[in-house]
Image 1 (cartoon, rainbow, N blue to C red):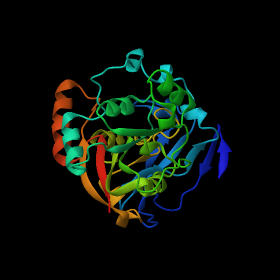
Image 2: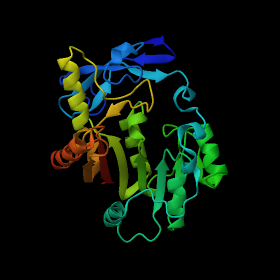
Image 3: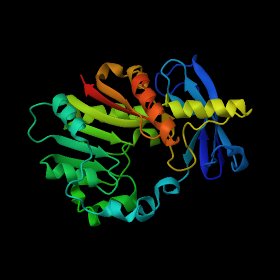
Length: 305
């Protein structure tokens, strides 16, 4: 454990997900800033990246923890999103029509679902679901984002907690659904937070999670190119630069956690998303990712038992 460049570095002796000590594979090195095809030209430092051979979680070791959370998330929302993002669009939906059908199937017969949005940002999802008649609550740890959600997003202050999930308090068995959209990968101890959120969820309730996949085809291709160039750099994670991803996952990363007896996996899917390839190659890569579960994003639903 040491401090450098505004970070505390915490050594980890096992996989943060399945807790295995025997299956940890050195995967490469991640630069402290974006560097494209030649990251060593710009990186002031880098971190070792490991992959668990048992559950396929990808993580840095050591884990960099900023000495102040404002170091990562203290920026003004206007500097994080373009101006049009703040427009109050009555047609905005946090889920696609297909996803809404899936959610209705997973939590059937509930007229007014009690919903928690973890990492609410400026409250767009909360506002959209409240308009559908849902009973919505939120957690937003960023002070500036919390303020913007209330002033610009018109979210009632009593419905949006300005705290981390680690410090949040809700009654047990309170929510029908909890959503972690683009949140879990940012947490220093994501599985402790998930275990805690299960306390707030009603039996049979659903946790919705969207996270980057550690099996993304383009990430593996980048690693192969770097190896051919004699480099150990990878594109997995971004622990010290935007968007500050600390972990990447597969569905097995959730199947094998020590508290897996508290939930079942109700559904999961890998989304291809971006390829960063020319159009012709992008089309082919997208098709391949769909059929091989090697897309960029994992969407998974956990049901509390």
